[in-house]
Amino acid sequence: TFAHNANFFLFATLEHARPVAQARGMPAPAPAPVLTGVPVSGMAYLDRPAPAGYFIFPDLSVRHEGSYRLRFGLYEHSNEESYPLPADNLEPREFCTHRLDVKSKPFTVFSAKKFPGLAESTTLSRIVAEQGCRVRIRRDVRMRRRNDRVRGRDSEDVMDETAMIR
Image (cartoon, rainbow, N blue to C red):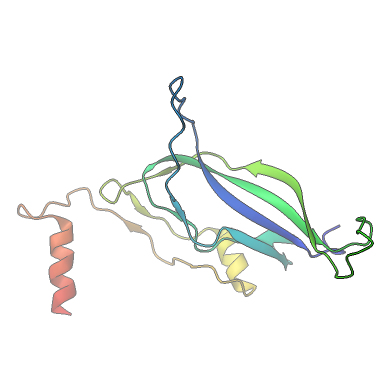
């Protein structure tokens, strides 16, 4: 029924893949803002790979290493007349209804030193980009070299020197 109602949006939140149990009597610590980027996406109708509504999050990233999963909350925005309105309120009201939650598979976020490198973009990413959605496409594979120490220097030092030469 996506073709009839385009008022759906998805809200992404980050959670630990395996939550840590809190000690008895201790309040849970306030969560640090770890997820960056825009966590809300409206539905985009795409013809390929299959005609459907897709939710695209092109700039989400996680700040701290660890094992996480994303929780996606589907909401529907409507101002339907089926909702009862008070007689004294003459202004139109808008409503958001939570429809369902879906969790992603767990994934690992690496520190800069442990990061294995970026793989080539997936076929799905390429198909989505071809249809006009703003998605970053990586055409070449950049794997991290295992011997990052060059004559006692870190690879970051070498990169800084080459950046300064340019």
